[in-house]
Image (cartoon, rainbow, N blue to C red; front, side):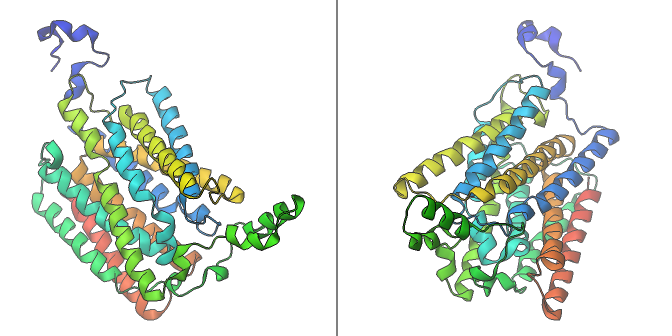
Length: 376
């Protein structure tokens, strides 16, 4: 229904008020939503692969470069969308996500890619589902389901998943950092830094200080496991809430559209601004000697671009479906892909017992996602 006639000032609104109708009212739009969710799962599950074995140190430089690529993706989307209205509140979602992402590198170094992704996906699922389903933070509860019981069962399986994953052991917890070879062949950070030190007459004994070693490497295997799981749960919780500010703007701001792509640039701007602030504070803490890894730049830019595409697809999925449907699907799919990378390529998860538990956990994960999809 077009309500322009009932609003004298409607002509000043860039986007017609007709867009405020629920976007998930047709099967065709739901189909687009599921396609977007699939794209998001593939790119989210793969985006960290380029940097998995690249020297990243404590992760602060990695995050800043990563978020630079994310912002570039947002800029492209903003141009394609015709420069829609910028809602600053959407930047708050970027802040939440970036705060959680700050511990990504320590997570990879403590429990590995597959385990880390599985744990933060579980926390992401639960926080995102609860906030969307029950209307936390001033949001309107989402209850447009054909089979609500299936949605509840799917999310209940999400509670079971991290319990199963906690019994899977990753080789990263026991493997020293010196045994990790880079994914891309070539000069290591240590040799690169040694060349620079020699060229400029520096003491080559400082080369080791610029290596990939960080505070994580002094932890025991048990400490790595516990801390890695806690950091993954924290990161997942921040990820789960990052869409709430965007949904709030859509539901409460006059003239706001339901097109998720209109909020991508503001959201990504919040990510880049937060990562820049954190890097500045980090540089100050390091007395203007932050750990910078030149050979990580291109892999990290690729990783960030892949993530930006995945997050953009998630915005589309939220629009075409709804958050309580898109979250269970997109938070479970990438974890399966990440687990496959860990098993088949990185060999982080080995042994009959570990693989058996992982298989059961993956079956539970797929079942939950399918039930959630069928509930719509």
